[in-house]
Length: 140
Image (cartoon, rainbow, N blue to C red; front, side, top):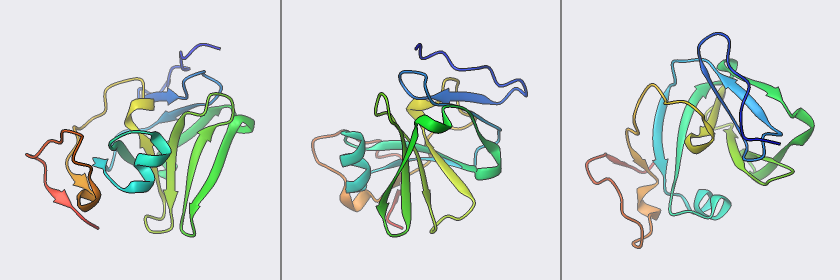
């Protein structure tokens, strides 16, 4: 399968996993965008931090691959969505932020309507990864 996603006919954003088995659309506006430095995001994504965009869950629509989307309970209050085939980690939902779906920015095909606005869980950041020190550091 190719990475090419279905077009969002309403002019929003499209995205999905690396292999294209799981695809989604997003309606703008987004709620926020931030770099997360928490240890769980780092481990799950194998990266120094993960950039997330938050959307009301009502603005997220799975358009392909319901049977290929795997939800993993990463804690008692949160779950992470990935593709069963290629392993792309794309989604995050938590009872801490009810009614929101967080989407890994790298899994969105088009430009988001905002730039990253903060470094969250910055108290857990690693010293081997450069960060944008101009952004506020937030430790929720």
